[in-house]
Length: 315
Image (cartoon, rainbow, N blue to C red; front, side):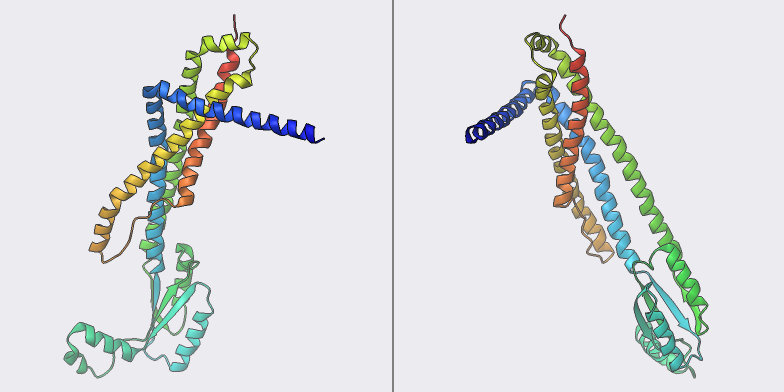
């Protein structure tokens, strides 16, 4: 029993060693045709770097959108004759709404005091017999309340409150910002689909040419009894290396682009008194990029290699 188990382990080890040998031998095939290999890898790298760059753009656009949407707030200007009890009751109703995350109350007296300090003509305001400013509630919206439809419904409900004179929210920029991000998301998906389809075509065509160049060697191998699976293996490993190296090149190109633009973006953000930093690919996203390139290359090579090697038969 142990002898049989040892023999099974030996066969498994020999199988693994044979695959490793062919894996690194196929890497040598890339060096034997350096120009065509470099061209293929460069095309793969650029084809993968472009959707990755679009994704980085979308990621930063969503970050900016989330930041500005977090600043969205509704201002409630109360009626002049609103009593303290009515203010308290309104505040309790507002606190129960899930669309509202934060409530700030500014009384009429506090508003006038703040206005005097900011306007610079406090003496003129002292001549007024009555305080013309209303009490104000400033409502910070939650994530659910920042959606344009939810914010519009909430604004309508606030305008219907009897103690509210006016409720204001700039809905136009919220809708525009959300629309721009949605459009950008669709563009990224469309461009990524086209470019990743290009990766499939490039790898498939490159391996087809490699197989045609080795046509006579494949015919000889089939004459001496080699199976299609054995002949396909080196070409599949070449496709694997194309995907790995192309994915690494795409990651490097995306990293260079983010580094090059980060200084420009930081300088632009400083003009608007912001400390926004350009977001790049995280570790998981970088690994996913390389894995995507590898899987696409394996898919294309598997389809192309099986199809064209089966078509080659010795005369």
